Image 1: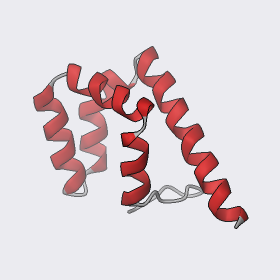
Image 2: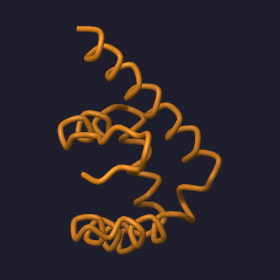
Image 3: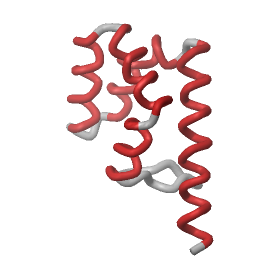
Image 4: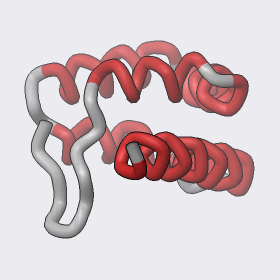
Length: 88
């Protein structure tokens, strides 16, 4: 998992937990509504390590107001989880 400077990488387990949450499921449905083929292509690009291509494919949906709200919820959930881990 490559990360940007100043960001902590997210483990696959954390990502699965986030995507399994209510907000994560809503986001996945929203992404799928933007085109199942586009979502599959983005997943394949991400798996191949091409995050830029994955993001480019998903950007039209991710920039919607609804997606932005869901992403904020997911980031809040991740932040709470990281704080809990770091405080132990």
